[in-house]
Image (tube, rainbow, N blue to C red; front, side, top):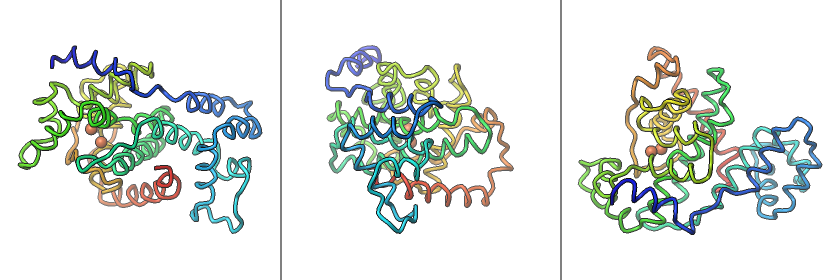
Length: 286
Ligand SMILES: [Fe+2]
Ligand SMILES: [Fe+2]
């Protein structure tokens, strides 16, 4: 398949999920400083699945409430607006895709890696004082979405890609090129285009393995590139179809991080924080 033909095919898949409207609606409500807890409660409670999941997360032992939290407004206060926004975006994006899985693809592992990358991106963005922390969560969450699209909509090709990796010599991306003439970065980027996501998000998804090619927002792309590596290195979120065992030093330059700062102590503290955050809030979403 020619690259352009494949792009058209991906963008025209009729069953391709639409960008969930509830996520967009809730995210803009939370961004508005005038939004009250009661307004938010009203919007969320219209969706039973969302309501049940938000309550489940607020009741997770990590938040340490002795009494059961049974109302949405209390749950919203416990979780706080910022995490609530991430929770809602994650739930609606994850549920937009079918949970199709087989021996070649474990959807739980896939979303764990996606969530870990989202949390890691937001955490590192905040640590480094970037203004892109909100977008970085979504970019992390969606960076490998092209793999899921390939598995669901180009199933034969996906099996060929994974099958050809069995010799241990080829990488996932090499085989994507051989079989599809495109990588999951490009495929995910096409989906993001169809969803009309902001330009820098499209770019971060598209170039997460080639941060040097980003033009619109190099920082966001470099961030996703580096946290993808971090999640694999720290073994947070087990997604082993695509192994990432190194990073492009250009990414660190763009992020204004020196190699000397990436010490064992950095890995240790970042890893334990990431693991805790994933378990505390996000694992029960999947
Ligand atoms: Fe990837
Ligand atoms: Fe990844």
